[in-house]
Length: 296
Image 1 (cartoon, rainbow, N blue to C red):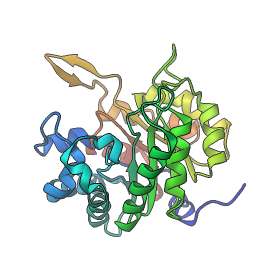
Image 2: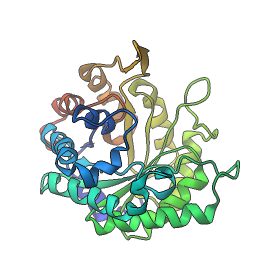
Image 3: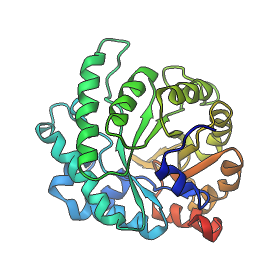
């Protein structure tokens, strides 16, 4: 087996690593309005953002993310906060760092640009400058590692990973599998095996999948990822497929049902496990309750 980053090896030494759950819905519980930019709260409502991060630490997360998923210049678009993109990211890392204390590590979130390379909505040079700017600010804010997540396009993922790696921090590379008959391809047609092979080639420290679909669908995806790389696997599934009821998005999976798949995920190769859309600190508590004490 090739070299494992010291931070990753340190975390894995105690067994399965619990990450966190969703942030957007938790921030809405703190008063974020539908349609409001969550990342802007790093500057305007830092205490409320910290409350979300702290709730995950209290629930048992050994790794928490940052409120910076859309905090790149392209995704922020015309939003007023786009002119302060470095400040938003720096603050996001600092907030999670405060919440984590010495109980958890901070893996800063970098999401996609929201623009498609293949249709010419954005070009590679613009993406590179955008992700470089974000990654640098996250590192300056004190992140322990960076998670490039919810990627559908391998070219965009590579550019983001290269930017993250340039900081010298460990990097997790995650794709989102939500397309095809079995929901086991990305929107751009990438398979888990392709994703794992390419991410490994890009030099990430952990390969993963997040969002897109429910936890039971991520068990075979996890197995496929694991078969194509020697790197540890990171899985953050949704609380099932969302349904619209009375105009509201509803996730049906309960914390106990979600946690019931933990053993199967670990058996399929997952070393880092948490939740994405529809999950909350109760999901992390339910996962923690199923782990041996050494893995908490």
